[in-house]
Length: 281
Ligand code: OGA
Ligand code: MN
Image (cartoon, rainbow, N blue to C red; front, side):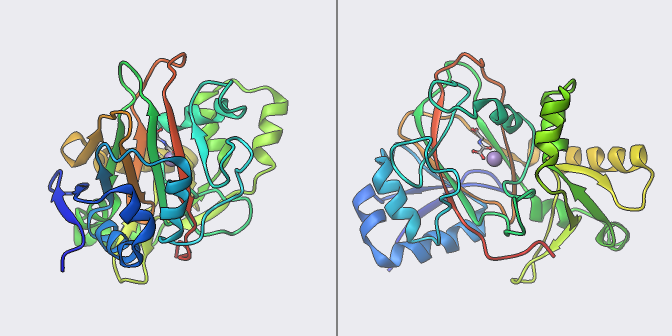
């Protein structure tokens, strides 16, 4: 029996899932695996107007894997983190301006944790203008390389840091800010991630600071050029939110960003993060 009704949203990334309701998602054992399979195939799953309550969202996410509780305390429900620029709803909202740049969640962990397997957002309040979430397929970005590029870029290693992503939105930081960013360790990752499945994807985005062994500016220009190729408009799915939508993405094979919205907007997404178990290698 087909458990989910899945319709692709673009040629390269994203699919809409219909025919499920919150009770089934939280209560049906077989759905977790079906959702993970569909996620691997499509990178992004959109559940329009699902209306998941926060507790039910966490319950459902438990069927996908272990849940990240490291950001608990910003929302009454453990496992829920409010993504908003409104400081009254999230005291660390200022950091979230970095979501305006293309990135992969979990490239600069506190220790050596793997990138999160899946990030789940449900729209509680939406922006009146902008605030779409945009997605690009980082497997397709690798596949688009020529054979010569696959060889050349497959050998590169890239240093990622929180400082790199924060500097893009705060180019003129105070020494205290810089010290705080630097308290998080930097991480060296291959540019090309070879997954257990055998698939390969690119590890790019705001946290990518420089290419190991390459002139700083030359390496940064290369990273910027590759990111531009990977995220050209024809390869992107842009999700325009309605209240009650839930979207899940796979950080193994998707780059994402928020399209600009008014910093004073009440936009609020409730996020649950499912931990990963696949190191970038
Ligand atoms: C995130 C994120 C984008 C958005 O929660 O990790 O990047 O559109 N969010 O809010
Ligand atoms: Mn993100």
